Every structure is written in C-alpha cells, then in structure tokens.
Length: 187
Image (cartoon, rainbow, N blue to C red; front, side, top):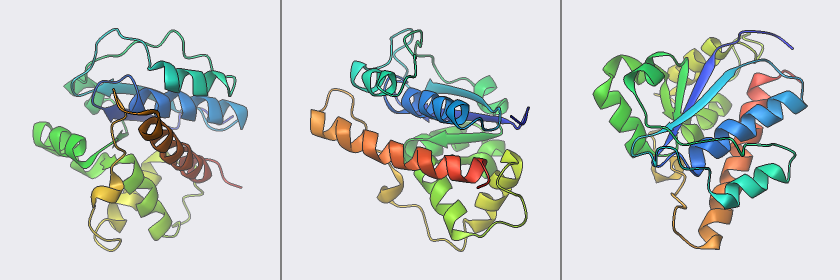
C-alpha cells in the first residue's frame, strides 16, 4: 500500500445513507484491493447526529465483509471541509451549500457523480491515477469542457423512501465506487 495520499469527505443530508455507504464502501474496496491509504470521512448537512447507518445500506456492506456497525452520523463542520483534499457530495444542492459557506472549497468540491464523470471526460495527464490532488485538479480542469452539472449528477435521497429507491441509490453508488477505485488504483 502507498501511504498518505490525501483525504476524501463524502457529504449527504442526514449522514445515514449515501455518504456513509460511500465512505465505508470505498474504504472496504481500497483495503480489499490493497490500494492507497486515503483518509475517508462523511458528514451530513442536516445530520441525524449519532444515528447508525441505515440498515439497508449497512446490510449491503456487511454482505461484502465490511463491518460499519460502529458508524454514527455527524454534522458537517467547516473543519471537515477545510481538512479534506476533495469533498464529494450526493447532490448539487449539497455542493452549492458547501461552496456558499466556504467559497475557497469550490475547486475541490463536486458531486460524487460529477467527479467521476469529469475524470472520465479528461484523460490522465500522467498523474498515474494515484495522487488524489492530481485527480482533483484534473476534474476541476474538465469542468468547463465536460458539460454543466445536471440532475444526473445527483443521487436521490433514499431516506424514508421505498425499497426500489434504496436499491437504485445503492446501484448508482456501487457504480461510482468502481469508478473511483479505477482512478485511485492504477491497473
């Protein structure tokens, strides 16, 4: 494993569904692939502080051998944003919330779907897919040429919605986790 490659903060609304699933899913995938060590965290803009992860998403992780049972939701703070090399939100509204509160974070804050879309749109500039800061710079450079962010860059909030909405969100997140892994671990 390569040490100290940066930090990722995942953000959603309550910090009980999307952001912890992305955090723990990426952590488990990186560990399984013996990938780079990246600090991973999550928080919510309207967090259900101290609540465990939604049982639907926790069960999906357990099915992959990832024990996130100790997870507890936490509220987003300026310090969380300041301490992250990249902030990946579930929706455009959450990205906008962060950028309005902390304009200096604009160049390193994306929706998670936008981030992977931008990385696919702009070929690697010799960053080797390993350096998180190079990936963030690459995604930022692609913003103007890869099209504006749309509702397709949002992962719908499954909280208190049907099983179908939960499954759809999980499938979207599983796909984005695969995309992230491809950019973080050279093949």
